[in-house]
Image (cartoon, rainbow, N blue to C red; front, side, top):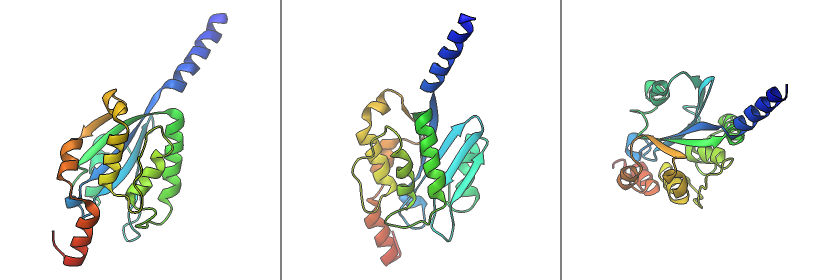
Length: 195
């Protein structure tokens, strides 16, 4: 009987240390109509992959459960929102507690209206990441996918080196090198109508 109690105690202790997977999907500035790029977030558990993508009102937010990574990578392009799948996909190991908190924040904020200065797609993702151990740096005002990826890389080097963050698709350094500074690029496209 003592062994059963020990096994249950050990099993519960182990589960509290288990990690869960959170995905950051990022589209480059040249992949989107606005020139600003796009960021979204997904949470993988035993039920599937819960995906959130926050867009302006004319498109709306995506809040859905998918069954595979292929479905996750292709959903925005299949819906005709993006021209292709995400350019960069990062996988983050988080604790079960962080996972629950991050997912709760994404679910709540998916119901809120998209705004450029307060709750654009990158702000949406950052609000979830603030419930994790990952450092987001000091970017403010208009958050962009470029800044989000750059800040995560620069402020969490240990997590990248020890495998807590994995690249699933794309490569971070070329992605950042090839991205124009998004805000001036988007404004130039908006006012001049060209690249």
